[in-house]
Length: 324
Image (cartoon, rainbow, N blue to C red; front, side):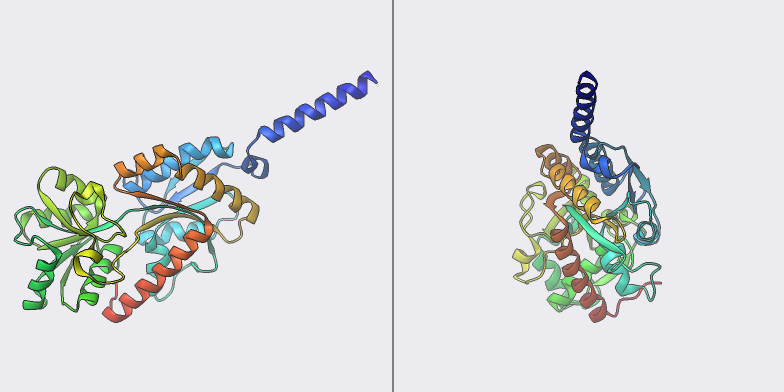
């Protein structure tokens, strides 16, 4: 009897230990690896590292951040699509998932069938901005000048085929004006030329323009967001400023997994991400990065991805946009 009681006690202790172990750790014996399609130090990288730190406790496993920059996110997306360890996911953005399929003749992965949504995390809104000394005071000023001088009013972007480029093209197409696109290799050189007067306007993220606004070097004329952003002062949304529909452009950040990852693992990871995203400190941390937390599960991200892909397919086709 004593032996049986001892065995029962050991069994109960083991069961209690298992119950106390997060479900992810019960199902996975490997650390979670989040592949980030950007170099270290940027807003998306910081978001990934913040999520990783919070998820370590939620999942009961270490979280590794793996930066794989290159080809507009295609390198990272391909690596995740082909991952077979059941513990590798992508910090996804539109570049490799909803834009590249409409610009590249052939991708090394199928974003529709080889990547599946896990959770929607954040939005990093875009802006239409000018240098402080610009004669343009409103979005209407820019569009009025563009109608008067077709193809002469410039807007800088962070590169051909980027969301910055396509957002400017969306505004031009919807407004019926011809804005001259000037692509740069990233935000830094584009902002330098904006402040130097080489380009009239720029379409760039809140995160990129915010330091220039804070220092009095630039002004935001409007944001491509659903609602006005407190961090951008009195700047209206582009939709409100123009009266045009469809000017909300979610520059989304989410987590996607290989389609072969077990459904149970995806479900547990999705729940953990939504829980982390809903923390008050997450909202505060994201705001510091110029991002808005837009917490949602797999269905929410799937909806955003579908709408985003449809938006960019139309803009790219209408504008005859191609990349080298």
